[in-house]
Image (cartoon, rainbow, N blue to C red; front, side, top):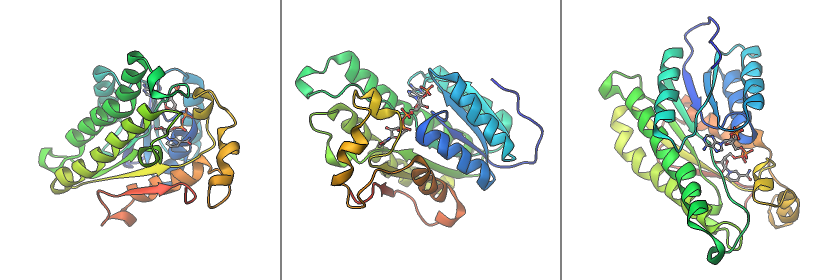
Length: 255
Ligand code: NAP
């Protein structure tokens, strides 16, 4: 963990999986918007440290720590560290994984379990810790959660990763239910459903060129950039979205 630098009392946002892709773009956007960030990595420390350094150069304080969102103790340690940095007012449930493209009949239980544990269990555990810290009922300042789902939750990802689509549909239900439950605690809960965004995740599914292959099927006729998802996340976290809760915004070029 990197020690925070001294700085003014800015709100703190936890961003899981903040070292790469959409999470990295989100950290940089939030740092520019006036947030301090607590970002996590699970397997790749160097990109996460570089993102933290870039956030600091934008005037934010940044903590970076290893934490597997599927491990309850890691999640609790993450939020304890974030609370040590300042007043936690935001969570971006960004960490996510998918396995190699496969039809359902070829999936084994270990892969399905990991997909559900990282994408769904992890998001719920992080949301729980965020509510515990942010709830006005327990002395917090209120805040906002943004869950990073996927258009796969609606499209189903046939022949690729139906398990991931099902895990993300669970994230969408988390957004709906927790928004209603936590509204009286001063906490808004929303989601984004990215479409085809240029990140490493497609290579982890076994097809690095997936965005280029499918871009012609997108009404806007291209893949999206992580910054374009980060902008939606930052808006949902901001006071500009003060009357928005329980919503999930498609950031998918119309696909
Ligand atoms: P990415 O480039 O592969 O980055 C994934 C991030 O998640 C990495 O920072 C990784 O950490 C972290 N991570 C993975 N497993 C984790 C775990 N168990 N605990 C904590 N962190 C973990 O993917 P991305 O495209 O930016 O994806 C970000 C989110 O967007 C995911 O939820 C993904 O499902 C969603 N999404 C992406 C797309 C797309 O087209 N790119 C579309 C729809 C939804 P390390 O760097 O340490 O490995």
